[in-house]
Structures are given as C-alpha cells and as structure tokens.
Length: 337
Image 1 (cartoon, one colour):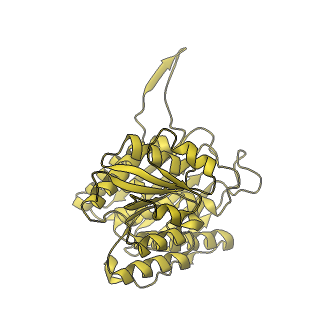
Image 2: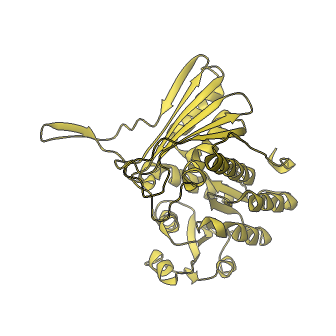
Image 3: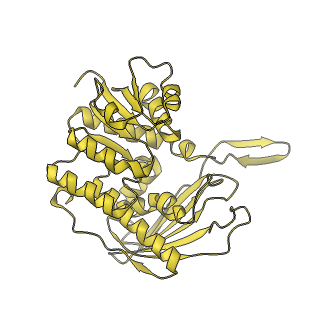
C-alpha cells in the first residue's frame, strides 16, 4: 500500500461528490484514484482540479484502475450489490453508503458472499455511529448508570423531500438511520414494526403519506418510536431520547449560533444532513481510511446492512397493510458474531 490509500469512488452525485471533496481536502492518508459514474460530465466536474484521477462510466473499470486499493460506494442503492460483489472478488476493502442493498434478498447475498471469504471487507455507511452526540449517548447507555433502557423516542425531520420520494422511502431511506442507531444503541435486534399515519401535512406532495409514526419492538423488550416528517418546511432535525429505569438522556437539541436582530432572537436550524452530520461523515471516512491502512475493517458490518434492509422491508409492509409486522432475520453467520 502506498503512502496514500488510493480510493475508487463509485457515484459522483450529491453524496459521491461530497466524499470526493472529503477525501481530497479533509481526510488524511488517502487520495481519489478513480471515479465511476454513468454521467461522465458529472464525474469530471466532481474531480476538477484533482490530478491523476481516472474517470470511467463503468464501475468495474474504476476498480481495475491503476493505484486503486479501496472502494467508496456512493452510487444509487440498487447498484450496490453488484459493486460490493465486484470489490469482494478483487479483495478490495469497501466503505458502502447506506442502504447496503435496498432489498433484503440481495443484502443477504452480500452477507453470504463475504462470509464465504472468511474475512470482513465491507464497512456500511451508518454515519450516526460516528456523531459525537450519538457516541456519548452510546457510552452512557453502555456504562449502565441509567439502568436498563426502556424506550427510545426519535425525531427525524427534513425541510422537504426530493422529487420522486415515495411513502415507502420515509421508512427505507429516512428511518433506516434510526433502525441502525436503535440496534447499535441498545445492542438488540428489532423484532416487529407498526406504522401509524396521521393525516398528511399540507406541505407534503400529493399522495405522499408524510409524516409517519413508526414503532419498533426489540428482542429485549424495549420500544423505539420514530416521528419521521420529511416535508416539515423549517429545517433538518434529528433527535433521540433514551428513557431508562434510572434516568433519561437526550441528544439533538441543537445549540447553534444565536442570532439577535430586529428585536428578535433565534437559533439557526440546519437545512441539510450534510450540515448536521458533516463532522460525523468526516470522522467516519477518516476512521475507515485509518483502519484500511492498518489492514483492518471496523465499523458497521454487512450484517448491520442486511438487518436494516430486513427491518425496513417489514416497516414498508406495516405501512401498506396497517398491521403490526414481524421482522424475520436469517441466521447470523459466525463472521459477524
């Protein structure tokens, strides 16, 4: 491995371009060696000013480009399975944005393929595990000072949803972060999902069931509720409160800059996840680069990606049927024990 880890970035859209910027300007120990995107113009724009970067429309050509030692997948979810399996075939360590694979059947194929290798190559991009507030909450719960966790109350709000956003995507795109965060914070699998729907907000596009109230049950008897509201209109807000037997702890109450003007005072509200979780993304990618350079793979694994897909699918079925829906996980391979 060279002085700088050569990374192939698959996908040059909103997320991919941000990771290209991060690898070039923020993260130490790595460089962008290749970029793949069917939109060559977007790929070339994302690497403008970077020297020695190979740009391809085909992901596998980028994986085979000179100097590539690792892969960061930021392409649309349906392309992830093929890219992950191609990276595995080349023995390349991978940081894959969520969802690992949108459908649980494909996600299980990735888990089984990695298990056959007998070693981990994939880290899944659940960046909240790298957020300072979430990490403090995790440490507090693990210490046990608050006693056994009973409930997690979660809020997930966006200013607006992008074009084409569906009612199911509130769960399998937005709430997928809470799915992983709950599993990680509690150290428990989620076993059932119920989705309740208030009337849609006036700002929601026609036909979009927004907001939704999602209730998860866990194997340890805790409950996790999530208010997801992707067209709230005023800001990006993510909060989580853990209620335990001997106390509670809450994160996400933004202590942002206080602005006073014209006889009023108020705090700024982040408008985008790339603002609220900028430091978490930086920490996530830096940790991945550092571990990869040491020959290690850390962070959320392929089983975490698979479990999130299974729970999200159960959540979508609960949304569509109005019924409590059980989560049916496959047997966990020993690699992820």
